Length: 400
Image 1 (cartoon, rainbow, N blue to C red):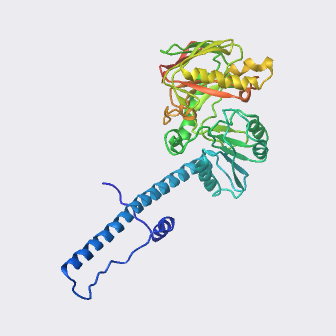
Image 2 (cartoon, rainbow, N blue to C red; image 1 turned 45 degrees about the vertical axis):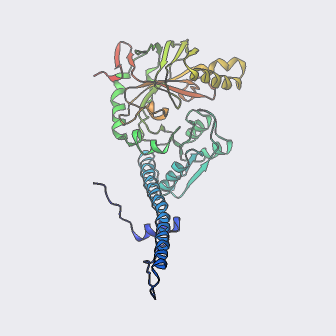
Image 3 (cartoon, one colour; image 1 turned 60 degrees about the vertical axis):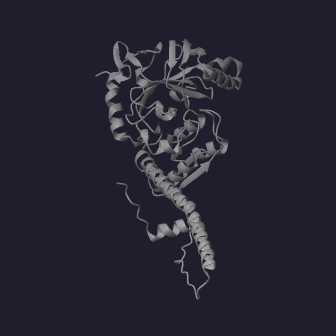
């Protein structure tokens, strides 16, 4: 049975204030004298009409009240999820400087984070910057300067700030950072954000032994992916577990992935992206041909043409000798979050347990040399992955 909502007087007064609810006294109809039947009929018709008008006037009010209640439920859900971020993931402490950076697409999330963070510290600043144009684009200089003055930076934005000079500079100065590129209100209160991040931390710790001393990675799938490359096993990042409570730590939320820098110049083969590219849930796979760590061709539907244009524009802003570097295969990783789902939001898609992803573009945050100002990942749904001769994943399932 549906649960009845119980309203306090304070709730009712708030709703009344929002929608100018007027409580009408009972309608009392008194007739001081008898009228002719025709007059009585006319009076009755008028009363019925008046009553219908009152009822009709009340119907939108009921709909408006329902909308308010839904809004209150969403606001509370956003706040509860924000508390997981500020209290558990970031572990904000009294007196810490906290900067929350959002844009017009994430304003409600930013406000929820601000409200939650102020429970822990009275030095919290919320700033709304213009929406960027692509992942990896630098924020406006005033925002970058503010980042350097903080102990904590939380950035729910349309496009990722993770691989920017601004974030690297803030980390260097001792900040701890959580980025949430492409975050939506629905994502913020469900899916990967509801995972047990302490369990994810344990799973990532357990897998470290499997990665140890493995140099060559081979990725295949049924769609045509067949690519090999080298890594330095010491470069694996296993800290993307959602717990970001020490200086110079950084995490994506929702968290849950292991990732590494492919050694520059070592990757050769074909990558077929069949899940998500950036924030697009793909109808047709994208085929990337890679030679010596650089994408030399991309095939697919209209999305492929859009990608060529997007990366071409990024290359045009570089010196001619560096333009090829925009096509660097910058990152490889696999998902470890059992609650994450592929929904067309790459922030969560790349964390889904059993998937893997490749990112193209800037790799400087991982220690590479391609400083190109753009960084976009694509997800493979059911990969098979080998580390040297040891199989890690078999069609999207971890090998025991």
